[in-house]
Amino acid sequence: MDIGIQLVVDVGVKIVGAIVLWIVGRVVIRTVLRLLDRTAKIRKIDETLSRYLNSVASVLLNILLIITVLGVFGVQTFTFAGILAAAGVAIGLAWSGLLANLAAGVFMIVLRPFKAGDVVTICGVMGIVHSIGLFVTAIDTFGNERVFMGNNKIFGEIITNHSENPIARLDVKIQLPHGADVHKVIAILEEKLPKADHAVSDPAPFIELTGVNLAGPTLVAHSYVDSKKYPWALNAANLVVYDEISKLGYPIPAQEVVLRGDRARLAAGKGDDVGALVHS
Image 1 (spheres, rainbow, N blue to C red):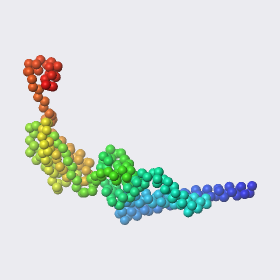
Image 2: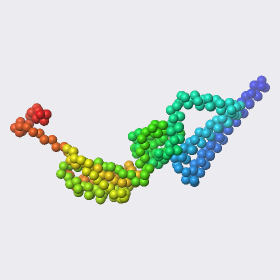
Image 3: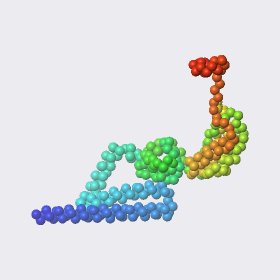
Image 4: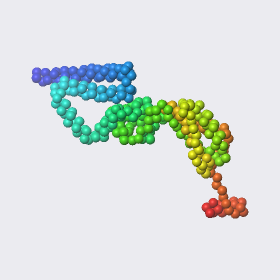
């Protein structure tokens, strides 16, 4: 009876000790992570690298805490480490994709194709990089959605970093109607585009005539803008183009269709006859 009571007391003490150790350990981990974050800000360490190191430290410290808590129950650290290593091998074989994401995340931190706060386009998704994690990268789109992508998927795709260079060029396609004064339109846009929001005056914008289709001449306006404001600059440039061309009073570009045939039959307005003439 005494042995049973003693066993219950011992187990109870270990459980209470493990709970206290877990609570204290979690408080210590949070404190350490806050100190790391504060140190990174004081030393002006890149935000992307800071978040990544914070994630790694959090994982390692939590694993260490779990090992310590198990040690309270008499589980040998070396034994647990061996079990953890064996489990790691098994998990690695089963979840090779996760390990590929982890490796890709490390390479992205080292090679730095982009960092937190950059405007990027990846896999057809355009937005601002929120964070690069151990396995996934978070991107905030301009539709106020947060998209998570596997690091390995990103590393194998074409990455467009709109913020890498301080100045970016945007292209606005323009369709004019027949009879429009192309030279006048070009002169007006070359004057007005540098005054659009987030645009820069050097280099100066240039507009080129790219061709003529059935609706009329086509132009492309090339304007240079602050790369960090690329999406907003594109919208501002489109508004300038629309407003300035609207002031000229040109008709809406449209393809002209000419019907050729017997005028008398066309004047009669018979649907079948008109349809036959259109297809003839």
